[in-house]
Length: 188
Image (cartoon, rainbow, N blue to C red; front, top):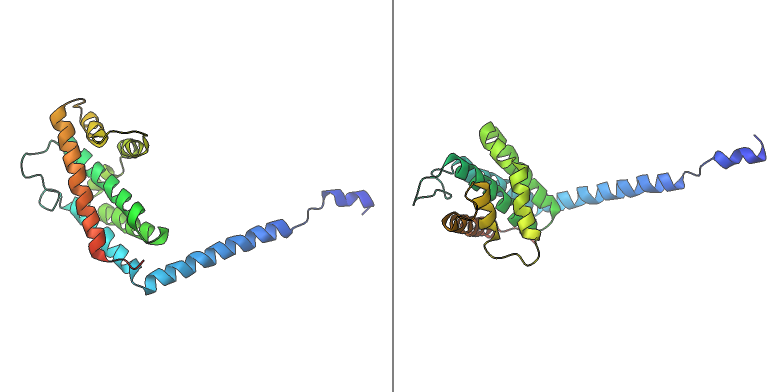
């Protein structure tokens, strides 16, 4: 090996430090998980995720029942999508940390998939789901933006009664999900 042959030799500490950093992150995540498991938050997240899923599984006779008027299949689909959006939002905004939030969401989606492939297709409608996310991120959005999006998705764009139905459903399920999350009593 000549003196110039060393030019293509790479010093490895940066890759070792990256691996050490990854190990540190993994150890930290494991530590946080154990902490959340020991304080009961992981079990509470599992119970909450299952409870949210049960609301969808029992949408026709549970707390999301629409007593005043029957729903079309399209409205039912978009109410399920909107409910899953609200579940994601409440969990993301009000869980003690991302490990607890992810546990709750994993149980939510797994329980729905186990209960019904058809229902899982509803909650997996990412195109419609993303429109609600866009509503949330729109600067200067109006209070009825969720209802406007809901009406558009139900093929009733601009129909004030459907916009109102969407807004009412959103407020009702947000309050419902918020109450469930408070009731579960996460340890901060």
